[in-house]
Amino acid sequence: MGTLDTLIKKIENAKNLDFGTILSASIELFKKVWVQGLVMLLLNILMMLPFYILMYLPLLGMGLYDPESFSQGGDFNMALLIPFYTMVLVFSFFAMVINFGLKSAFFRICKAKDFNEATRDDYFYFFKKPYLMQTIKLSVISFGIAVLATLLCFLPIIYAIVPLSLINVIFAFNPEMAVSDVVKLSFKLGNKKWLITFGLIFVAGFLAQIVGMLLCFVGVVVTTSFAYIPLYFIYKDVIGFDDVDVIDEIGTVVE
Image (cartoon, rainbow, N blue to C red):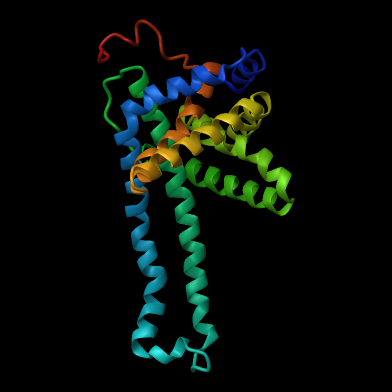
């Protein structure tokens, strides 16, 4: 991890990125991390199940108690929807935090597999005490920026897709950095490499969906994580990892 000024200079002096090289490297890395990507998505689903149950349980109970309450002309108290909408907001908040933390951890796993590091897959790395508040703040900020960009109509959200996508990978490798600096770096990198990043996000996402559907639709769960991997290589090629050198590679697993 470097200082903000150091990382900004790396972004400003970044070399041109090659679309085909990054896409090919992403395919090769996906072969190593597809299991971890699948686990990440399954954990995301499993961790959200309790909130789904809590959110719909009151409505389910009401429907079982009085099946006619939801029918047209039924005796339904609209005030009873207030707890439901409250749970929707709570659910949305936890969904943001869980998704953000797991995705950031996935990028750390990608680095470990890319450099053949002998480390365990820690999916809950960013839910630990040192980083939990950072994870919460960044997930809320990301959501706020996305909402604001959406309210400003079509073009702003198209632009914001790139820096918002990069926030996870910037945070993954700079977890000690201030929240404002992570956001600033994400927009700096997004502005510098907007076109190629947007293109890679679009193509990788499209390939992930197409290949997943060819695998009888269930395969989409397996291939979804492929869409994230090009972001890792953009970070690697532009900013890099100062902690990776010959000495660090001693003791790593060589395949």
